[in-house]
Amino acid sequence: MKRHENPAELSSGADTAFYSLDISPAANRIRGYKSGVLIFDSRQCLLMNETHHDPVYYVPKSDINMSLLTLSEFRTFCPFKGNASHWSLELDGQRTQNVAWSYESPLKDAEPIKGYLAFYDLSLDQMYIDDDLTNPQDHDAPSGTDSLTEWLAQGRWSNDNSMMLTRQLVDRLLAIGFPIMRLNVAIRQLHPLIAGESYLWQRETDTVVTNQMFHENATSTQYLQSPLKLVTEGLGGIRQKLTADQTEFDFPIMKDLRDQGATDYVAFPLIFSDGHIHNLTLTSDAPDGFSTSHLGQIYEALPMISRLYEVHKLKANAKSLLQSYLGKSAGDKVLSGLTKRGDGGTIEAAILYCDLVNSTLLTETLSQEAYLDLLNSFFDAVAQAVYANHGDILKFIGDAVLAIFPIEDSSNKSRREACISAAKATKEISHNIAQSPFSDNLSSKTGLHFGQVRYGNIGSEQRLDFTVIGSAANEVARITDICSTLGETALVSEQIASDLSSGLKSAGKFNLKGFHKERELFSFDPDKFEP
Image (cartoon, rainbow, N blue to C red; front, side, top):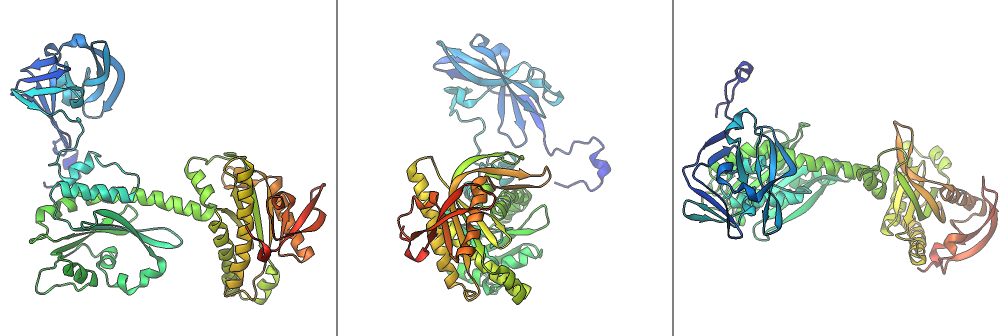
């Protein structure tokens, strides 16, 4: 269809026929039954053909047993036809809600169906068109002949993530006769570790597999010698008949696919609204490969396919960035809707505070780049230990790390498990630091405590932080400070010590800065601790 190039043509009132309601008299006798009871019998039905929808019969009220129907309170709304009222069916004392709908005050283009009802197919047991019995099916069920664009436009896909979307896209292409043996969608990601993800379907396994490409792989020979690189650079789509004697492209992936019996390969650009280009590739092993009609359907649908994957990419980016900057638990809570100042709650947790020793001296003796490398190595050592033991890092405070190990319930068992997890993390921090390439300059001091804290959003109206506050959070930092005074690697509070059975020795009672009551602290030897 020719597109209008002149904006004036679009405002002239001429019908572009991009979307239409076509209402005409049905040439058939239509009957509907429920539980053996005739609900309607009409030779005066109207047939509506609406763009991107299945045809619908509208039955005049005069040919319906309206004594069986009552108007319900349910309403739906359509920008083309108007506001739809719904009707419930009463048979043998049993009411079936919302079996039919009508437009009591239809918009102009739908005026002919005023005084008519349409029935959801599943609300009927039998429906006859003339003398032919039809199989009732969901009014919104997809037609096997719908094009890919129609399927997308009608919203007949339903998915939670890119993997599910890829599965449904594959199923749709197979249903409309696409000869695909392989489909791959490659999406670049905004993530500190992952450069991109791909969703690969292959007929031999009939599953969608997610593969990740890390940033260091973005300069690998495999990527640099792939068609995806050229498509991503904005050079358009790539098509290669793999059965040709002389091929224009000589990418390794094409040779591999040819060896698997592939006959045709095409890579399409998925252009997102920010201008970044991602990839959709299709491979066929049919003798003639893809037809122009096949690829035309894909080409027409590319903008819609791109938008769907972009939505999932934005969701994935938001989740990964929030988890990277706030921590997994805090990031998930913010995504779930805890975004206002004060949102959150009181929790009990084992709290770990680990500080880099001699950081001031290190900043004076090392270059900024060398110190940054050392600091990142320290944070890696702590983070790996915390995450390995089911903890969550809340923040990096200068050259220190604050982490929590929340309890699942208030039982003694959950409390003990949290305390042991914090102690195991402390032991692994010591091991990780010893294995670090900066081990000669790296040492740490760690404090462990258990208590109740407020976990949620604090800050100004414009700038919030999702963290823990409370006496227990302050105490663990003070406990860590005393490590330097005593020359200890790790100290734990009495609340933690009561749940540990090894690696402990009383260090005495101390007044923590800012607190009045003395606390007994215990030196913790990671090498002697056995969970």
